[in-house]
Structure formats: C-alpha cells, structure tokens
Length: 189
Image (cartoon, rainbow, N blue to C red; front, side, top):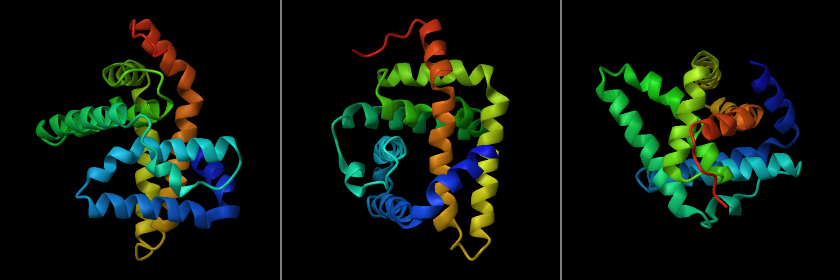
C-alpha cells in the first residue's frame, strides 16, 4: 500500500498531465483494437522519465518508436503467456500475470532481449510470487474503488497505479537483473 500512497503524493500536485497521458494511451488502445498495448513500454518510459526528472509526463514520449521491435515482441510474448494462463481453467492467468508482471517495465529499460525479459521476469517472480501478487491485488482494489465512483475515480487511480508499478519495479530492479544474471541471460550492449 505504501507504493500507492507515495505515488499519489508524487503526482497529486500535477495530476492533469498524468490523467491526459493515460487517457491518450487508453484512446489509442481503444481505437486501434488493442494494438495500442504495444505502446505499454513507451508508457513506462514516459513515467520513468517524468519521475527521474521530477516533471510532468510528456505525451510525445508515448509515440517514440526507437525500440518498437523489442517492445512489440515483449508485449506479444506476455500476452501469449497470459492467454495460455487463461486456457488453464482461467486460473493460470493469476500465475502468468505475476510471473511476467515486470516484462513491459523491463522492455522500457531495454537491458535484455524480449525472450530474456520473459525469462528474467519469471526467474525473479518465482522467488517473490506472494509480494508481486499482493501488489497486483492492491492495484486491482485501488482501481475498483475508483470505478465505484461512477468510473470517474479511475481517472485518478489508474495514473497512480502506473506510477506505483514503476516505483515497485525500480525498487526490485537490481534483484530482477541479478536473477536474470543467475539464469545466464546476456544483457544488451
């Protein structure tokens, strides 16, 4: 819960640009039939850059396609894993969501190739399954609470959730890369 409180404190003074960023991402995703999900690593790059530079997020960062190939492959692999999880009596999705939770954030950092991102995320998540599951569950509850306010609350809770997710990733980044190194996964030059 601390990640969500801290994230709220970080963005509450400048909430409108965060809402606009997530609204634009949602609209792109809606009007492209879900293909906007390929921009998820870019969304996390925008969050990373805004937090690191202590500024508002810039919508233009959502449409920078420098690493689009790796981003697309990573998102496709994550979605395939989640579809397979859904096929296991709809229960497997809870495992795949946790195991590959960090994949788009790792793609945003660009330290590993797409398949290695999946392996690295899984290596870390296997050892920290409960913590990641509780973080995801808390995010779902926060967004559910926002949705209960006639859906309008999600304009606030969704940006908070994305910022909290990035901060959660940053807190574990070194451990994730250490787990990837232990698996023998090469880092990109």
